[in-house]
Image (tube, rainbow, N blue to C red; front, side, top):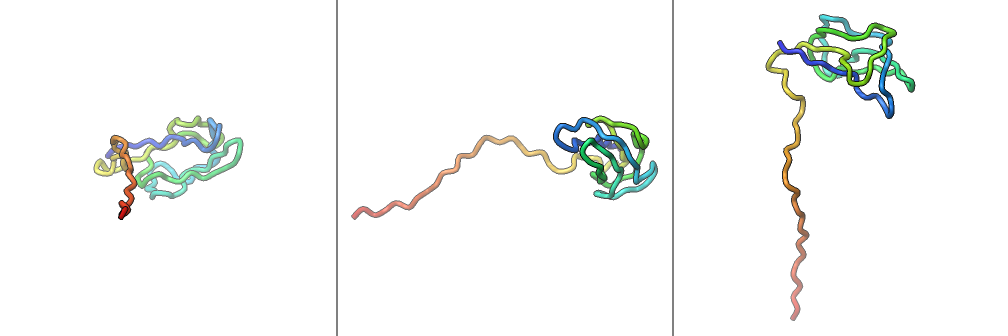
Length: 109
């Protein structure tokens, strides 16, 4: 099994922290992608954060009322080793392609 951390994401312009209001999952729970994990409050609003992936909850950080900074671990998932890859793909760097517009040659008779 592999562990994958999920840090507190940037929740809005200029926000650097959020307060945990309520955990909606517990350690040991199996969660699905997009399942609500935790409710947090910023200076602007309270929001539920969805799970970025499926897995078992290995650890949570922050009790209700505690503040977590953006980028710090919020939750750690345990997933099978064969599922512990990068989600999505990273674009390959390639030289810029020039686009050429072709126009039909006109007969000049």
